[in-house]
Image 1 (tube, one colour):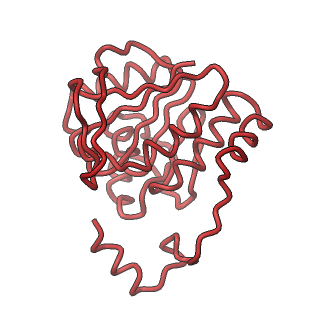
Image 2: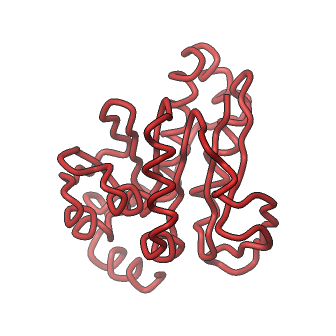
Length: 206
């Protein structure tokens, strides 16, 4: 089972590494990172360079395509060859998925037109420009297209995807092994719950 995660400069670390940590434990699965040109890829925060040895053009098919977000989505949507590749790969996947603003990449490739989808709360207007209907749900499955909201929701998506790729007991075992049992100290993890001052401060973090 081949799972492919494209990384471009400016990727959001947890968007990619969170799902990777979960999906790498799926029995029979291999997770590969790919990029535009093999070499060093830098994350959006600047301190987590990743050496990616494989160019996306070298991959002709995979079982799962997982597109992370972050500032990298801008380079992805501007790369016509990459979007063509996404469309070709999608034609043969079991599941095509995204985390955060990775949904905008799927949208730019024409894969979300007419579908309900989710993304980071700050990118909802951009998502709907691609013909998708936004929902604030953390994970949305529309057939074999699965989108997840901002950053941490990618882990939720990956656990659900692990169940689809194997079975629920295996997915639950992976969740237990990674001790994924969120108990955040504050109840401000969504726009619906965050007070105005927190939302205002969050905008300054981008």
